Image (cartoon, rainbow, N blue to C red; front, top):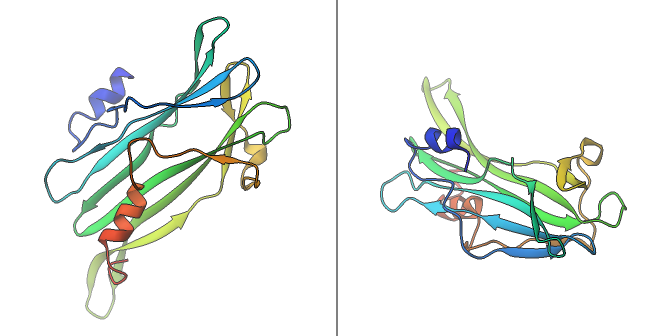
Length: 188
């Protein structure tokens, strides 16, 4: 856990570094295995209903017994919070596919989001927050050596039918799905 990022979270409702014990393993090449680790902590009490977590990917070479930092710099990949009556959330979905045809598994990432926009009502001369959904395009991280690196040339390319969606780890639903369920259509 990067010390600076841990310090930055000391005044937040939850820590995004509460990693779960279960790990998802997947084949990357004939020699390498990918490991998906995930964290997620939910606020125990309070009206903010905050939660945050991270996803990291490691590469394991069982023959050499070596572990490599595959994709560690995604930051906070899932979060929810309620502030001034407006709930906001985001969550990153992950899929596996050989997007560039080099016979190695690449990682697709897509952010799903509910954000709060400040709106001004001219008639009543009042400002208020409105939740709005946003879906971002797919971004791809291709395997280069012992790391996955962002490849802008594949931006927006949707996964094919042969891709494999990674399951949630120690979560029943995404923060975005939670916010959708806790807010009525009028609130959105």
